[in-house]
Image (tube, rainbow, N blue to C red; front, side, top):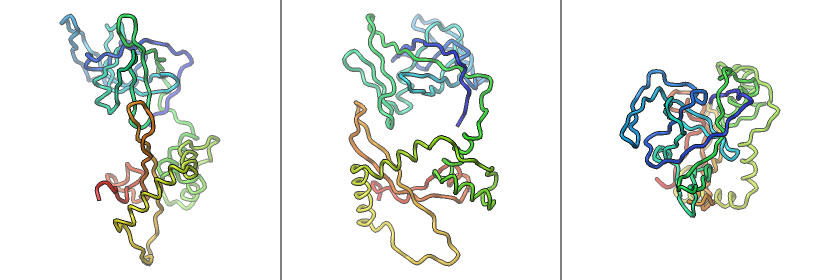
Length: 276
């Protein structure tokens, strides 16, 4: 995860939602971070003329209060208007709905993330705040480091992280201080435990485990530590962004730290009942 310092001045730009555009494009160099210096290409315009693409990278946009990272954006110095490719958005797993003079873009987990009204000349223009990246990119505060380690170990409590550090049980784990802000995911997780809909989903999952004989109770082998488990919550949305299903999985924490097994993952699934 990249941590950046935003400069104070932001610019509100128009972004055209284009179904005929093959790639996202922007002509403003200051909006890009980590430009790929080795990438060049030619793009054909509607009048059959070609225009040079000088590198590609990511752009940060703030749309209706939501900050989104738009990846794979072409930097085209000669371009006067910013273009968002609807085809490229669909390739990223987003759903696009044209209805009643509006273009709505839905994320599979977050729901509605972008919306644009049709203009008088039948174009869909979205107003977004482009967030340029300051030169102090990648400077991370101590509180951010603590939060990263907290997430890396499956939202382990900071007291638990301090115990791991004091006993030198994890290589590279620094001395951490408890952050002033609470972890939003942990707060939401505790709220789920009190929700009747989520409790019902948990009951259904447990019943499926018992029905399929997923586990059996045994005595703990000598010299073996018991790993913990965790509930992972997810909602399924329809094309309108409304919740139609509460999905839940019981997973076990992994601490083996073997690259390719659980070095890049926080949780390893116990079982997926739709494949059993």
